[in-house]
Length: 104
Ligand SMILES: [Zn+2]
Ligand SMILES: [Zn+2]
Image (tube, rainbow, N blue to C red; front, side, top):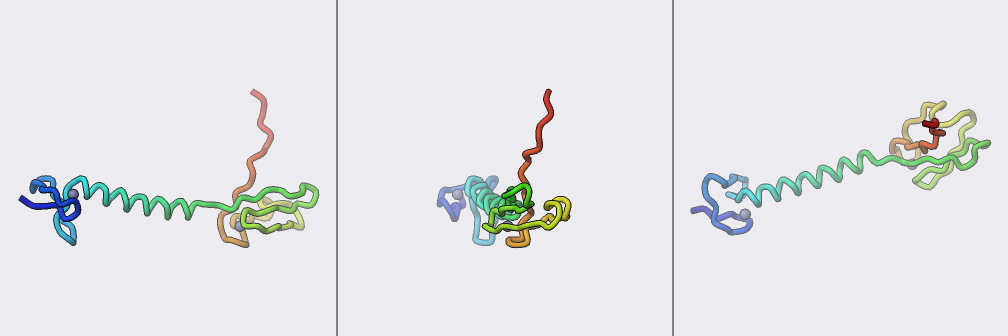
């Protein structure tokens, strides 16, 4: 009989998993994998976060950014100027989707 190095419970050879440190039971192996997944997911979340830009003044084409700046375009807006990333924080720009919705 082998003991799991993590929870110290006896495990059968069938459900044991060899790791660098020793044998772990299936339950501890899954817990380990889930912890890895969580770390990976939080990295993804960070990567996918964006900087929200909202129009501060329509006549002035000035945008307030999530990272606390005010950016003014001389002509047009972020779309017309092909701005995809915030020049302050480097995150993808997320524009408000307040386009008028067509009636049903
Ligand atoms: Zn275990
Ligand atoms: Zn930003």
